[in-house]
Image (cartoon, rainbow over all chains, first blue to last red; front, side, top):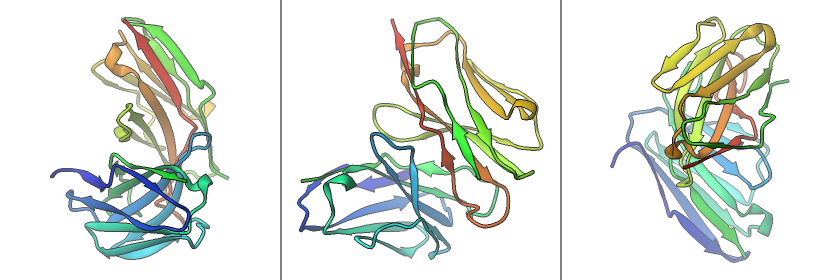
Length: 114
Length: 117
């Protein structure tokens, strides 16, 4: 595997389900990000992790719970979601987030909440 | 406040036409970074270019060129001799150079480019 991978690519879940999104980067980066892309809004940053430590939580509801066990893996745990949470969830990575670095994105997980 | 405006929501051109995608940004920072990303139908954002605020030199990469003008706070992207494979949504983004939230990429709403054969 190369670059940034995300699984699953598609997910349909009910409002009472619990599921997790997984992201893995193979670029040797130290920072990882979760973004949400809805149909009618710009890309929204959700969380930033730098060297496994969360450095940014962009006022995300607690029904989204991130986890970063190491610099290569990032999870987004989902529970009791709402239909408006249906979106494309993108993971990205970069060298440390404080530098002048571009972010590299995965293909995203298309989430549908029913 | 930081803001990126891509006024063109959708553009449709015929193959081999040149097309320019506009990007206007707002920031009070003196150090910042500008980016362009391409999002094909597969969904993955593909990095195209990064430009530092202190480097106004324009750049050309094959059929792609970028015009950075601090005087008008613009960072426009031109595709020369467009091809069907250029069809995608293109995002312009801004990031602060220092201070809090350095990792934040602030995206415009994107411009959907359709290139017809």
